[in-house]
Length: 309
Image (cartoon, rainbow, N blue to C red; front, side, top):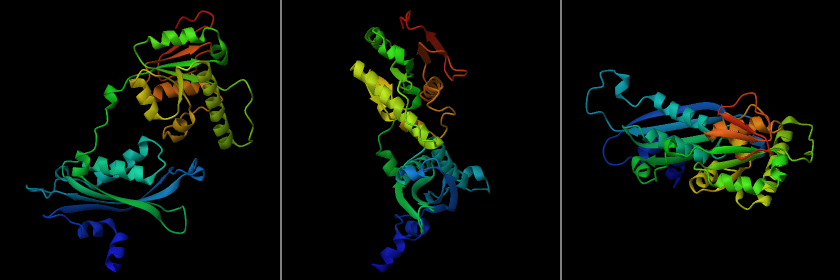
């Protein structure tokens, strides 16, 4: 039992050696690779970075030909660190388990890789290191469902509605027309007429204002049952593929984005433009609102009184 406990907390290279499959496998390792990153599910972990330590071992098939001292013929250490940095750059994550899983998957797509041990530890959350370790093999990767590629993802038509547009008697008629469009539709709204509580603190005020936009989204949903409030990318992807009109509730996507918006919820049109770019939207339609200074997608502007979508 003591040997099992020792191995449980040993470096992944020792764990790999103790659980080695039949047949010789070479190993490469990255030890004590420390990165500062924003990660974590707790509120105290948002808006700040912490040190994360990575220890990774990759078991690889021995080469059947001469290496000739050529780096292009091996699975290099750079592939491991690139997998780490690539996944950290994708999006802000709450769980180390999610990050470890994605790093392992990326490593195992390399032709030589057979099995990988990924240990990730938080160094600043207590007196010791808090972390997870996973073991994954190419067999695990082969049985995992393949996610659709971004090439097949639909490009949404993003529509920003002002409060006046939300209250307009033409709202249902506009929704009727939006339902007939070939591309999926996502609606965005701004702050409600009522002034949100003031916190006197920039980070907390941002959260309050994002929640105020979400309250306005629910008000829009209350005016037409076809408008469904959605706050995650997974739900948005499902809605786009199934013809559902979504109303974007921004908090989660904004707060989880690695390359988040440079504007705040107090500039909801610019925030909608950022979201349209984040979703690779086809365009942004503004009903009753002036265009933002810049936009990553084409912008159309229509007056409320004359809007025919």
